[in-house]
Image (cartoon, rainbow, N blue to C red; front, side):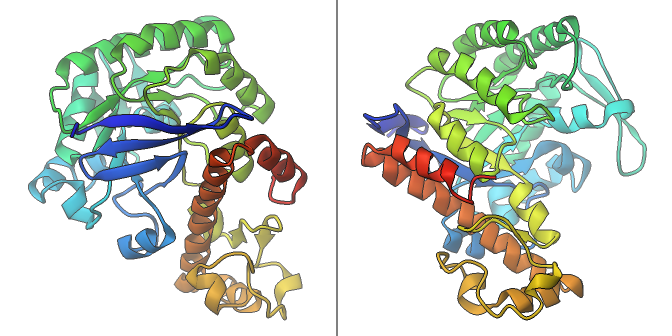
Length: 371
């Protein structure tokens, strides 16, 4: 058996959306899939067993944060991320490019790499594409990302073009340096909000894609209509024989619209971030349990959900936990939100397998789940 292989299991006759199987050294992933984000080698407040029970098949960790602490060499000495965090299923690590991009005034970019100041202690660091590969080699994830430059939303054409070409040049260096057949390198398509640049980027990126392609630089502040329009531009250019990964996207509506536009993999910190603030995705729309209307609401968060939170706790109790800053509140809402999104992906796969995904999309758009 090949260490990495992607097979399309079924293509929906109604919509063209697809279900696939992605084989990795740490197990199979059924796509389309949502990947919970474990930024610092943990999905905030949740154990690997809880993620497994929720149905998670793969998680994402962040190279930049793990490079900063505890250090990629330490993780390597622990046996890699899988052993370090006790997760025996597939892991994807991003290259750190987006995190460096988000440092804004703390970094300087040139053709060699990125110089930046640590957000922890102000210390200076310089990362090259080769360094980004070395860090991810040490972390030992199944899927690793090429080092890229994500230009800001609102950047002019020339700035976006320069960032796109730098990303392509860095990709060539990443590909040359990467030599592990236990890790699959995903190149990243950039080009900001300019369809012409996006088309150039994907055309020049595809020769470097072996079993996976990432779409970066979206969901960075642009209207969703702009994101969907760019995805429409890219969809005819995707290869059929590999998964397509839309980076940093995780609201329910974006997941549905992404799958409709040919995307197979998604990740986002959104479900756990809003959970810590008391907000939950539900089959009846978003609920913010810290609000006063839930003070004496003893109904469950979502009667369609079978997670531990929904089997045991009322909205009134969850409101109490959130408003008193009890850790359990954020934990339970995080568990619920992750479970909700994983179940949403399952519902989409079922609709695709039954050749009725357009019907699913229509009903979803009309529902309170569409946010």
